[in-house]
Image 1 (cartoon, rainbow, N blue to C red):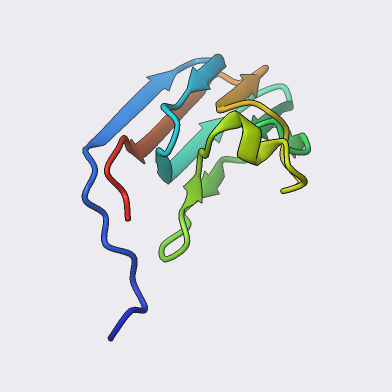
Image 2: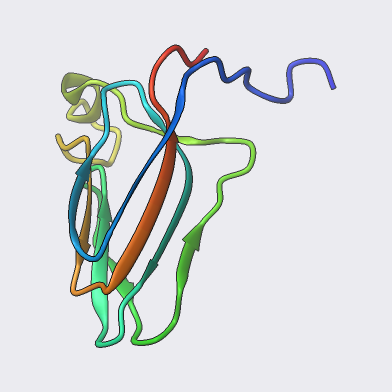
Length: 106
């Protein structure tokens, strides 16, 4: 497929919980994200716009070919549309799971 897929050479890791903030290391890429809110909640990825989570509807982010990458804070603040956070914030959720490639991505 000649250059269509990024080579991922980092370590696959994950975080799971009920609600709160997951801070990824700089340069990490989200591989898969799932969360659920039973009362309606929000999700914020790397300081970007808040995503509304309807009650009892699972949210899935499965990027496949173009992973969401946590770059350095200065790069995020330079007009990319995202804030200065390397975090993923789950508010009023009952469960979440995030898998990510930690370092060494090319």
